[in-house]
Length: 182
Image 1 (cartoon, helix red, strand yellow):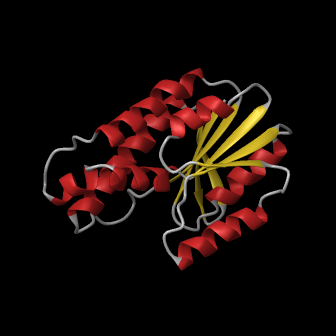
Image 2: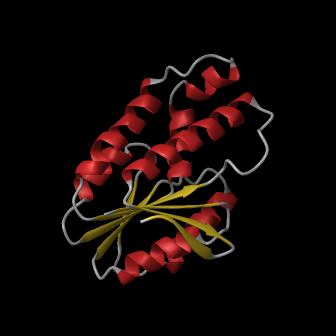
């Protein structure tokens, strides 16, 4: 079963995902996509680590999500991916996608397209429970900067495609879940 949890920043989406993982009764493996690029981000990562149960497994993978999911997925295992927004941002800056957006060029980045397509190929075939956390960035204004616009567009496309392949989709606002699918 695949469950996509969407929400804005500090909406409660990660807390909901963690609660659902705990309640699953399955062995939980937390797949963290964040990278500690500055002190504030390091504090966020520490906060997430401290509130997770010590017996959960943890894999830190900023780029190769599909391969990590494939290596960790199994019957009786709950994989919690937090979060796809950071993963997408990592992909955008790992290859030429950000530079292409800055120059107003079409997206032609093998790292970006290869990893996103690998996720959509792998996801429907994986055993076990998979909980995916992602930001809903489409409720605000259109960003002024080309890279920010590209990111918002790609995040929206990613969320739409994930919602189509997940059996359950939940939107979280103010800590309250609203089931959109399933």
